[in-house]
Image 1 (cartoon, rainbow, N blue to C red):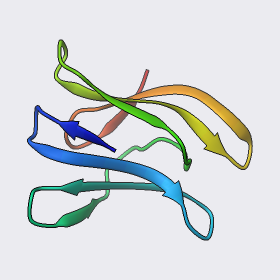
Image 2: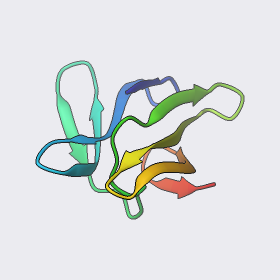
Image 3: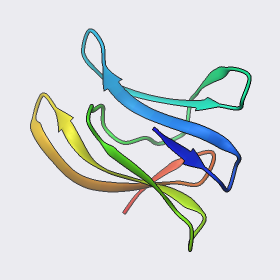
Length: 84
């Protein structure tokens, strides 16, 4: 989970429920909304999220899923995930 300063909201990705999740959620200060971006990282838990101030975007790195440790990086632009 990370604060997306460019869009003024909290962003949450992935998690672990009955399986690994690839959900993208935002909190706008009053409620959570699940988004359906055109592309998204593979399902995972334990990913790291950070806000890149210089480029005004969220960066997602790594995590784990049923395949093991993930070593990928993704950018969030407020509406879609892009692999790096």
